[in-house]
Image (cartoon, rainbow over all chains, first blue to last red; front, side, top):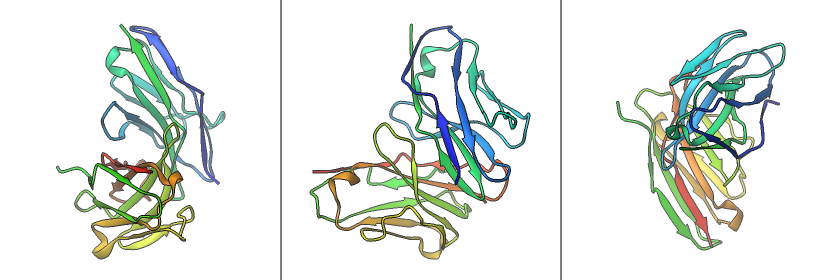
Length: 110
Length: 116
């Protein structure tokens, strides 16, 4: 079946630090890949996505590249802000099914 | 554009009681999902509808959980009887058509259920 594996958290960074959150997946066929974010007190919302190999999704300074050869979709940001503190979920859609990873909590301190 | 609406936002019940959650998806969205999110875990799909037909309910505990989507619009999720381990946030989401590559799912705020 389909699955998404995220690195263990939580992650605490200082403002302006570089961020990498690892995500790998297992899926049949050619999945679409997503990062969703959940800010405190809010619902899940799409952060970025990629639909085919070597696509790069980007939004709000975050980027992730669809790597088919390593089945990965790592999330990166060059300089995090306090407002980026949230829970981040890697997810995929394969065979019309949306599957999430466990999520990782990011805390950014001033 | 209105988002996905869920109610109630919070619910506290005793074990063995029953509870129902309601979801109104974004207008025109054919696909509707119910997810269970236990604290510290990622959302787990309970059931997926395409219009008013069930696409996937393989992880729905059918002895106690039921869901329906009448007329392919609103949906209700019911638990009867509830157990302590059902304490979680129940998320409803919708998307236009899930078969389209990259189709985004839009989530409601969720219902936080506490079973005591």
